[in-house]
Image (cartoon, rainbow, N blue to C red; front, side, top):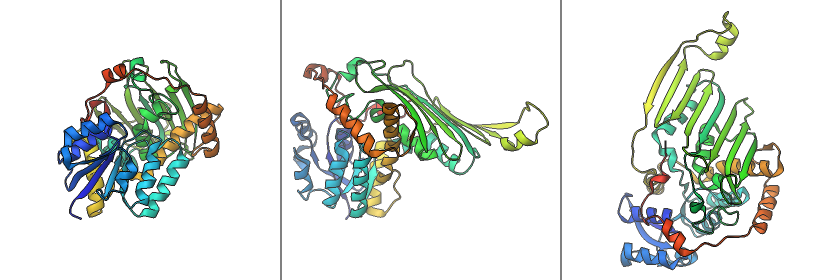
Length: 396
C-alpha cells in the first residue's frame, strides 16, 4: 500500500475539517476516498467541496461495504463512536475515532476488544497530546524531575458558553444527545492529559452541578477530588459559566513544582528533596533554595493534522501512535466515575461500578425531554464547514 485511502464518517464541523485537510493533501501518503453523513445538506457541501473524486454515502454501512477505503475517521455524535468503530473493525478497517471514546465504558470495552481482535491500527483524536508544553510536562514527571508527586490541581474554565450555544442544536447538553455536559463535551482532552501524566486515580468524589449557570439538564460546573494509592491527590475544576476563565495546571512533588499557564511552563526545582529538608533541617521554616526554568509554548502544525498523519504513518510504517485508541477508555473512566459519584453522593472507585452507571444513565435518558430548536437559530451559530476552529486549540 503506497497511500492510505481515508474515509470520514460524520462531516459536521469536526469531520468536515478532517475531510478538507486530507483532500487538500495536508496528510502525506493519504487520500480522501469517501465520506458519509445522514444530513443531505452536509453531503451537498461535500459534493461542492470535493467533486466526484470523493464518493458520498448516507449510510456508513454502505461505505464500509464499498471497498473504497482502507481506514475510517469517525466524527459522529458520541454514542455512535463505539458502534461504528466495531462495525469498521469487523470489516477489516483501521480506525481513528474522535473523542470521547464513547459515553459508557462498557461500550468502549467492547470497542477495544474488537480493535484488538482485528489487528488493525486504532487511534483516538487526542490532539492536545501534541502540545509542546503538555509533552514537556508529561516527560518531566515520568523522568522524576518533580520527585514523588504530591498534588495535581487543574482549573480549566476558559470555555465560557451562553444559553444560545446550548440552544443551537437539540443534541447539545443532553443525556440522549451527548451523554453529558462539560465532562463529555469540553473536557475529554483535559481528562486525558490528566491521566496521561499521572494515570487514572484510584478513588474520587465529584460534584457535577446540572444547570447551575444555564437552562440545561446536564452539568455545566464540576469539581472532582481524587486520590491515588501512592498518596497523591488531584483536584479538577471546570465550568462553562464563568468569565473571564482560567487555564492553570499545577503539579507539586517532593523536588518542586510545575505550573502551566498563560502559554508557558514554569518549573521550580528544589536543590534538595523536600522530604530530606522536612526531617533533617534544624530550622522550623527554612528558606529552601530552588531554581526556576521557564519554557514558552512552541507553535506547531495543527494537532489534528499531526494525529491523522501519525495514524497514517502507523498503518504504513509502524510509527508509534501518539494516542492509541485503547487509551480512550481511561479519561472516560474518570468522567463515568465523576457522574456516578454525584448521582450516588458518595466516594467511588475508579473504574466505577459499570452496571450501576449504565442503569442510572439510562434512567436520566428516559426522563429527559428533548428541546427542539429552530433551523434558523441553529444556522446562525453554525461554524464554517471544512475549517479547524480556533476553539479546538489549547487556549490560555
